[in-house]
Image 1 (cartoon, one colour):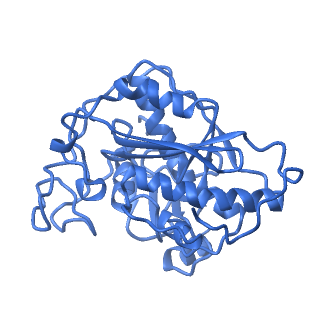
Image 2: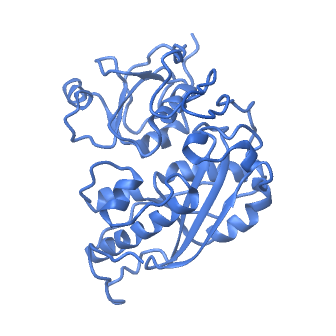
Length: 335
């Protein structure tokens, strides 16, 4: 197991009584980032109140649609054909989550995907609180170059074996979370816990198609993605909504707002931008006085977009907050 380089384990008397009694470290791989996307694999590491591993669980899930970015998660339609549907594993998944705080990297995304799957299955995920390890690393002021899981893992000496494989990502996160939790306990840090409100109703829209699966570097099917950048021939459609102005902190995003991104993101940038487009936002490649919001995990960096955002007074949020805002975008004004 990983040796904790940050601090020695607090004695029982020093452990904060208000800390949770158990955690479920979760990773899900999905067909994409939109509200109608589906889970294709899921893994859970159950930890006790001090972050020690109790057991782990993993399953493939048949998404009943195109598996999406195969080059990321490696799961083709053929690999998922005989996998159980989510409703078939929902009960066992729930047993792994029950009575625990859900822990994930960019936890709002994993929670939203899980909550939607349970709502489709006419059930409810037994989760009442979540903890994002991005937020925890900020609370601990860890000297990370960015907020990717691989950077958090490297900081604690955890070796990734299969990035974007749900079981290995969950293992890596569990091993990085344990020393993070101990550091928080030793420093008396209040854990960044957030309430989870399960969905109780769901209605699917027609499932969007990500496109023909790429069989190799040269196969860039019409309408599909390829890793490493947008295909030059694939143009994002123009935003049909007028720009309603700047984002007001604490308020909802509004369709038509111009959103720019800067720096590394824990989710593939292309998929994050696509999700913003599907929500009715205008994804801008540069920052100007008309930009409504800048999304960055490193607001202290000296990138040109961050510098301009300071000059123009453009609101700035991190990736986790942006993911939460995307779940409730206000429709554009009619007329």
